[in-house]
Structures are given as structure tokens and as C-alpha cells.
Amino acid sequence: MGSSRAKHWAFMVVIAVLWIPVPLFAATPVFTVPDTPSGKTYTINENVVIGTLIDTLSATDAGNGVIAFSIQTQTPSTPSKFAIDNGVQLVTTASFDYETEASKSYVLYITATSNAAASGTATATVTVSVADVNDNRPVFSSDIYFASIAENTASGNRIVFKQYLLVRPMSLFVTEASN
Image (cartoon, rainbow, N blue to C red):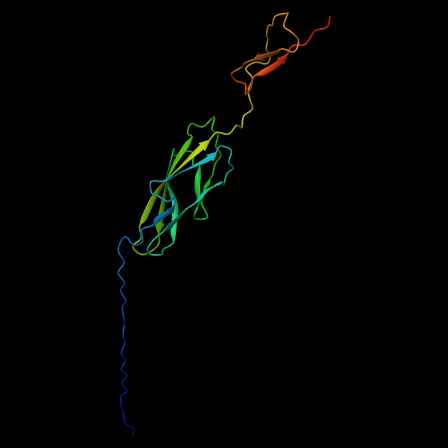
């Protein structure tokens, strides 16, 4: 009969733990666009189309994380006029009308959040001012205008009617009437 010898195996497992200390503030984003937390002001014309790019946002962090941007608040809050498109583009989402809207300026608080370990957030302020565009036709205050001139006014003299609602004064020329 054979020997009953037990086979024994011995393994040695070595686990190495590499610890790299990361300060808690290492992954806090720092805005590069807008370039200061106190903000940047942009001016757009009232006739911009929906989807107009205002700026491309940018931030970095020491943890080399991916930065996500969001609009934390908009003042005035309604109606919502802006969004972050494609993750980094601040764009318009509504139309503007300088003459009828109460607000001519919008303040946005943009948040940048890192996905790195020990991540943090940063906030920057963006102000968007809406500029008036001459997009309305002039309006006459009346359909008919009357004027009196002296009968001895020489032919070729110019008579100017000054109306405050007109873009420029209206001119008439005196001509001789035939009987």
C-alpha cells in the first residue's frame, strides 16, 4: 500500500498599500472663465436668437477631476433665460424684449463641482445685461398734421414740423399754387 502523505502548500500574499495624502481642498475647482469669483459682465442685444452662446465656462482643480457646471440661481428667477449646454456653454434659452420686460439685467450664480476625491465646489457670479436695439418702427402721434404759414412765404422755403416721437423732423417745401 502506498504511503499516505499529505501535500501541503504554502502561499505568501503580499499586499502593498500605497497612500497618497490629498489635502481636503485639493479638488476644489478654480474658475478660469469667468476669471474671478466676483464675476464677469456680458452684454447681449435684445434680438439674440435662442441658443446664443454667451461664453464657454472653464475651471480647473488640483485633483484633475472632471468639472461639472450648473446654474445655482438666476435673479430675477423667472422666467428662466439661461442654461448650461454641452456641459460648459452658457447659452440663452428664451427671447428678450428690452421695451416690455421689467428686467434689463440678469445675475447668474454658476457652480463648478469636481468629481475628484475630496471634491469641492466653487461659485462665480455672471451678470448678463440686455442692450436695446432699434427694432421698432417709429410711431407718429397723429395720422394728419396741419400747419399755418404766411401767404407771402417765398417758394422753396422749408417748413419743419418738430414732433417728439419722430426719429427725425418732417419737412415740407412751399410750392406755388396754380389758380
